[in-house]
Image 1 (tube, helix red, strand yellow):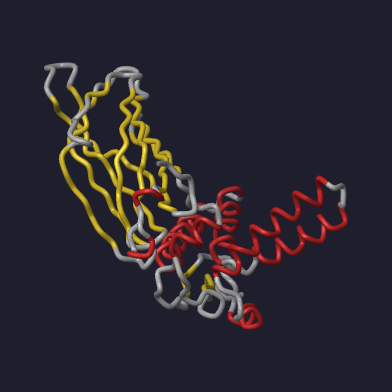
Image 2 (cartoon, helix red, strand yellow):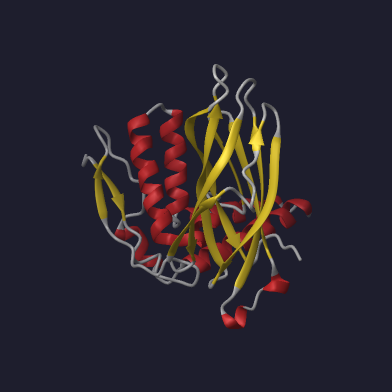
Length: 276
């Protein structure tokens, strides 16, 4: 049995609106002493070459709705048929396949395999773009990350009244709550760093002091919330980053250790939650 991890998405996932626009690649990665089939082989996808990511996303949403309606109407035979169709569709989606294999690896305590698969998913994120990640449940308009007891929660919103799609301008707001969940640590937010990627894969980095003109101090159990915004030239994109914080020393009352607090990746989506 070959000790390789197969990746084959060039036929199924041609560049579409909302993806990175780069062609998919074939790559083989050693997977230790067992064979893993993370993504479909070429033979499995040739018959489905007419499917694009957009097709899969739309059809998955339709099937999920049809299943709910069938169950509500007690048409369980139709629900079973639709469930089989959904499972077949999911087998054609490399991100969904990767996510399921990662779950199995963690459950089986195959942590080396899990690390490799996680790296594969990260590469798929770069290749497939926000649309595929949203469809596979790997990315939403919300995120939560915790670093050394500091929790950062994010929710993004589309601002239709401030956007002009015909001019390629999409405005988004994001509301962030930063909570100090420690029992005895005082921190101050000093700087922010954002990585913003649009639907074409174009990346922009933003760095600056504080957040919306403030450098808040967070006592144990306290939170700081703020709302800010960003614009894209595409209807979808992603944001992630980190805050640089300093920790107050209990010995001398000086700001001592510096920590980087993660802001988890979240989706900016013109079809997502909206605000005025």
